[in-house]
Image (cartoon, rainbow, N blue to C red; front, side, top):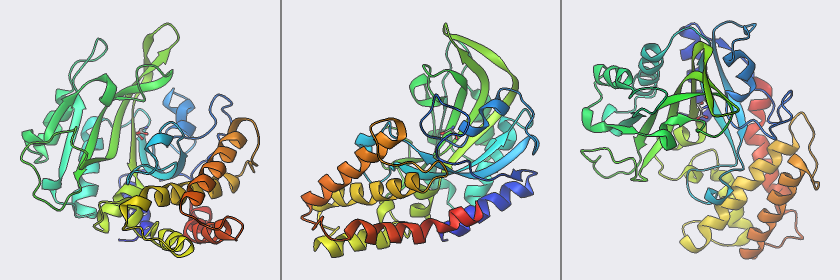
Length: 343
Ligand code: SER
């Protein structure tokens, strides 16, 4: 399944469950000067998660352009990206755990035909605010997920966004996929990095306020996020996102201009960083806000990404006085222009 088909399938599936398809917000938040970038699908929806009625109703779905700089150090591995797309569906005080979990499971196993044996889930083990989420466990089990594939984890893993950030938050259940070709282990070990997180279903019920107060929100909401890049790689049978159709031509171009091979582990990380950063650079530069490299805010991040990309290009002996970055940018623009046109 191609990426565009994955997005279409997702939106159509949730439309068939009564959701309205809404457009992606820009990467640069329009009305929130406290955040440099939209980092998740829920971010543009914060006022509605807090109780303001959304003009499109209580069930929403979209493909959101996301940008994260908090795990810049992870960039260069095979699954993290600075810019990525997140498929999401939301219930604003409408359905809750039963429907959310059932639909996620149905989409993965019936629409994408992912074998149930390759899936595992984590659920919240409880804290001073909410008890252990046995309700989600019961729903997962009723769908056929084996007890061995369910792990209870604490605040550091299954509370979104975390216990520090202010705003809407809550416990979540996360879905993992076994990405290795080898036999799926009998028991799910969330520490094993071959289990890759693909979908997060957050049961957003609290507003974290100053003074460590967790006040119940007006509504019990659902906020989910499914990573397009990770799922595309899974559907195409790769354990490395950069081998999937999203990145293939970019990596090939980097191989061509450097004269080096991606299969050589010595160069793979640098190639992934260049591929990630050029995509992120193109997407911030092309965003509605028209960001230019500068010393402040988003412009500073853009400048850092450009510098970092050049540093890694030099490591690969790429001739940086050539048009190498334009050649790469054109590939990214061609691959992503459908976002601009459709979502
Ligand atoms: N907000 C959650 C996340 O980003 C679910 O979408 O993981």
